[in-house]
Length: 299
Image 1 (cartoon, rainbow, N blue to C red):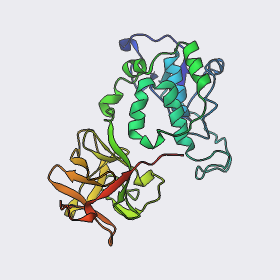
Image 2: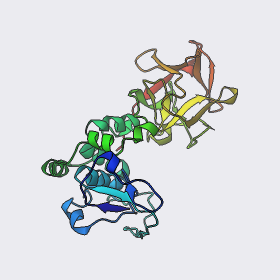
Image 3: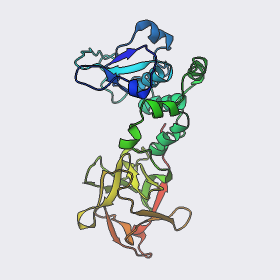
Image 4: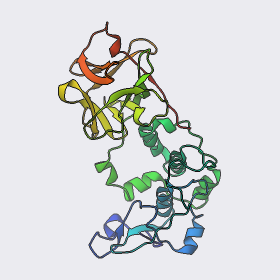
C-alpha cells in the first residue's frame, strides 16, 4: 500500500485498475502501508488514543483521503510487518489496556471522521453507544484546522461503490440479549454462522454471541447474520443482505415481556430442557414463547 501526496482529480481521471498500475483504495490493511515520513508527521501520525490495534488502518485511511491525499494499491509490492508488543497474542489484552480496546478504537475513529454516518456504525454495534472512548478534542481541532473534507464527500467520491455491496443498515427497533422470560437462559449463536443452529445458553451479559438486534426491515440479526427458519422448524443463523429474511415482527406484551412473530403467523419458541430454539404455532398460554430483551453495553 502506498500513500501519494497528489491533488485529487475528477473520478474519471482516477487511476484505472490494472494488473500493473497502482489503483485507488478507500482503506487498507494496517500492516501493509508505506507513507512519506514528513507528511505522516504532518498528519499527526496515528491517533495516540488508539490502543494495541484495531481501527488504526481506517483512521489513517480517512485522514489521508479527507485531508488531501490519495491511498493507492501497488500490485506486487512487498511490505514487512513487525508486531510491536512482543509475546502478546491478542487475548486477553495487557492489564493496562482494559476491556474492549478494539471497540473503543472504532468508536474514536467514527466519532472523529464519520460525521452523521456514525449512526450506521451504532446501528450495527449498539453495545458501543455508551462506551467511554476518551478525549478526541485534539483530533477534531486537527480536522477543522486542516479543512479536511466531510465523510459525505468520502462516501460520494472515494467509497462510492461500497453501499452497492454493503447497504447502509436500517435503524434498530430493539437490541440486547434475548432472555427466556423469568429464566437465566438466553438465545446464543454459539459462534455459529452461515446456517448453524442457535441455542439456549446461560446468560452472561457480555454480548458477543448473545447480542442480537431487530431492525425496521423486520430482520432479527447478529452482526451481518440473520435468524431464520431452518429444517424441522429449527432456528438457524445465516448471512443475509438487507432484503433477506425480513420475516420478524416484534410485539411487547408488557413492559418486559416480548414475543417474536414471523410473518407466517408462527412464533419464536424454546425448550428449556433441551436448550433448543425453534418455530412453532403461536400460543398465548405458552410461557416458552415469551422473552425479555435487555440492552447490553460494552465497557
